[in-house]
Length: 290
Image (cartoon, rainbow, N blue to C red; front, side, top):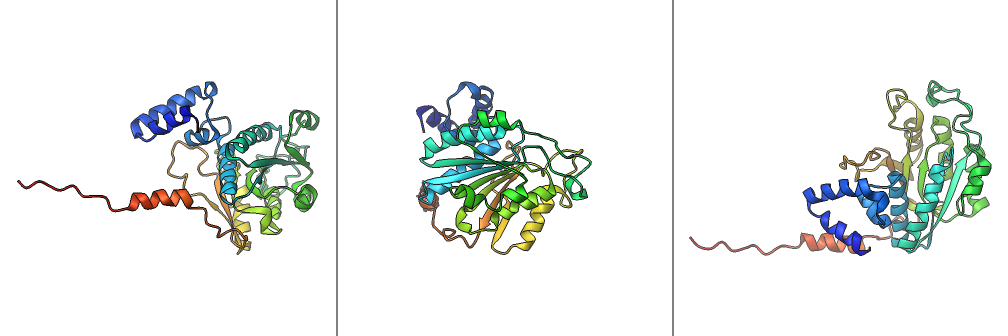
């Protein structure tokens, strides 16, 4: 953490000052050189939901003494998100000391067939969100594109690309059917993942046009996936929910892979030391006799 980060960190310990500093930093973020940690702490940047998942996946990998981790984007579309992931992952990798691989899944030709009511055909249509494949291939540097229908590409992903363990997934596949297909990624040895995976779902909030709910789209896919599983559960985060300043707080989920060989590996270390220190009995000041 650099000196600028340290100054901001100290300011954040005072609630009123902290709120003022946060607003000020957000307005001037593009002119500042913040560490990835401070960007996430202050919820600034172009795609703070992506940043949150990437940084914390890298930190978890570090605490597990791993040297590499992968982050995936399902639904690349034009490619702006993938290029941001690529850029931010390099910064996080340098800050945390972890190599981060980036993969993007997409048909390349836009959305596949939309026929089921659960796919919201009143809002989504085939071929929406097409990719300019050649342009994106030329623009990327280290990120890898996995082109084809996700139902066909997730099956051999681990054997074909031999990626580092997956620690974060940005799921922007729009459709119920495509989201269900993307969950087939978990039909493999859990060691292909971190024991707990950060997942962002794009299409579960929306507006009065989409009318997302538990009977359609990604929320229905999530419910059905969890109902079929006993060793993996994808649940809504609880730690971000009190943060009213975070617009994506209802879209971050955690996948717990309970049979993962490293699931029980202790990662508390410095955090638990601080908690235990704070819980120590403090000296009680003596009240002078009247």
